[in-house]
Amino acid sequence: MKRNTLTGILLGLALAFAVILGGWAGLAYALIFATVGGLVGAHLDRRIDLRAFFRDLGGRR
Image (cartoon, rainbow, N blue to C red; front, side, top):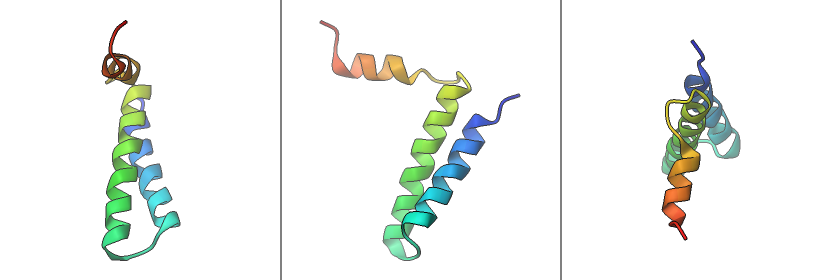
């Protein structure tokens, strides 16, 4: 089983701590980066389809 989702979350957290350390802003960045990393990892694991999401978000023409 691939673990891209977990890897994405961990990498997102590592990036957040590399950008800013401590405080409420650091916590917010950690949550944002973990969410983005988790979404990218889930997309790579083929659990969700981000391409379809952004295609539908832009609307069909």
